[in-house]
Image (cartoon, rainbow, N blue to C red):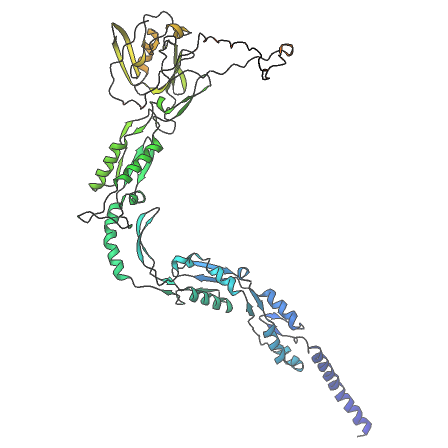
Length: 539
């Protein structure tokens, strides 16, 4: 074979080989800085990417929500990646893969189906991680290990005295922090403090037995339970209340009597009842009343004879006796000195008697509407016997009563007592009622009503019905302005020395000026059975 033929054959054979080799080498040269074709890392194709580019791609696809820390009771607390400055970087692992794969091996990588997996380098702030973990409820200071922790009997707000044990299953803070850091570093989804050995208990067995003995007595004392029904409202005495009634000595220890029983602090019982009365008593407290005319009438505490009043002395005695007798689960009313006609905050309700002594008119409201009304005559102002202003009630009722007094007797058909000798009754000796009769020819303080009216009024009104009697407040009259030409130019100026001054004018007392009112009693009058009313002279 000729040399030319051989040369042609060589060229034909070697040419493609040289071309393929050159092409392969060219591709290899391209892959000197990038990953070869077919390179898949963490299920992500990084072919043709530099290490930096591959890191960005893997970082974008990386998911880690943070670490969930679990305590002994299964309570979970998530430490998020954002809260600890968490970061993940794949550069080191990517570079190792890149270095192991020479550019000339790109063909092998291309036809290989081997999957490569790498874990990132984790970065975070240990300080932030520690701060976040300590925010977990189960990492509160009371649950952390302290060699001085003990068992004690302590008073709680809701359940009275309780045994509080701070010796069982205490968390070692440093161990918990280390376990959490290892969890984040290894990209764990959760760590369990109990399984991680982070708990330890302290032996206080001898003290525990001693406290249980005294707590048995405390628990029996605190088991007293009473539910009051106070005019429709509920008040409960339970362990949260009775815990305050256990007497302590000067050192704060439980005081025991000679028989080894707890001592009841009777002063604390009285203090509780006093607060109960302060909350619910309405008698002998300031009141405001809106009259039919729309005016606001104020009564001071001495004038308020109507309302609820707890008998504090008797109620304290009742409670002490019930506790000493071991009674419990009691439902009852407290002892009352008086009870309002209605239940609730507005204990006047919508049925009451309004006696407007300025108008000399009585209104009887029933279920919120004026049911009956009448003129009357009240106490004589000129004689200084004005009727008292009272926030009171109908104390008693009687028929065919003789009013007796020094040197006289007067018969009335109907009597409705209000306070002391004051009441409402018929006055057959009068021909007229209302108007201004009371200013000069009024009663000795009682409310005189027409016979026909009180005859119909008497059976409609129950004993205990609220009754408000008052004079409407007098509004001051404004002095008319002087015309400009009548204004004294020296008005308001200090007089010069030596200038004679006119004597002040004597202002006569107005004919309708009301004399001083008869004061209400210093203390609310007790509420005995109906008494014989004091006499009133006939007019």
